[in-house]
Length: 258
Image 1 (cartoon, rainbow, N blue to C red):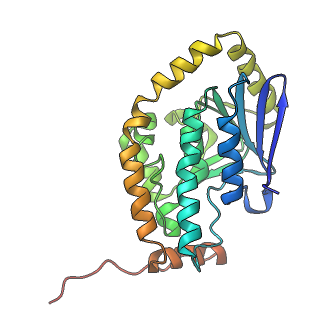
Image 2 (image 1 turned 180 degrees about the horizontal axis):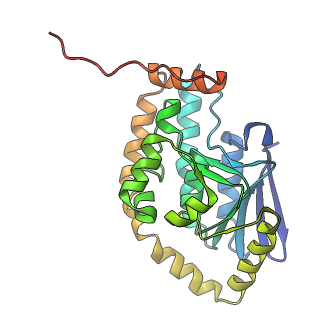
Image 3 (image 1 turned 120 degrees about the vertical axis):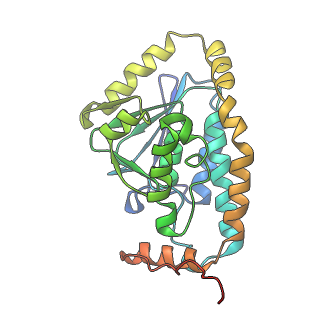
């Protein structure tokens, strides 16, 4: 069971991440299902990504980071990059219907989607340096183009949380609606998409990926550094603190020898 619900409604693919007990953080099996679904969407008008319960997505599951298996984490990190690429290379428009918290890699999924509509109760933000990681798959390279460099560094480096209205003001999402209007509003966007040429939407989307494509070296270099840092003191402490619900106690910066 992949904990990903995929349904087709009036030639639109709806994807629901279904691990509400962990705010829909995805594991390798979930990532593989998502990658395959986005890749097989050519006969749909659009794809909608959302979450079950009170969360949109908390990114990759952190339960392995406090006692990391390097091979499994390498696979999860790599699958995360493939997932973001699958959204960008999906031939159809992808709408993030952000129903709750979009944190860490979940926030980077919002960055990767073509459009994002947020429920008023949704929240956004990165978690990397707070949990012993780094948001190298969109937040450090593509996000500055979406919301500006200073704001992007604030989000990626300081790990602050932002309301849906703040995300709208920054340009991270297209629209904010009352919670009970999220799905109806997404359907209105889909109706607008259906009035357009699928062929030329695909061309326009591919051409619009210029900056994403240019960021690929940055993403792959960042991914390589994350893989090399598996098992580091900072990773173990950050994940352990997160799982225990306490503040992390990271090692201090190294001091020069006297």
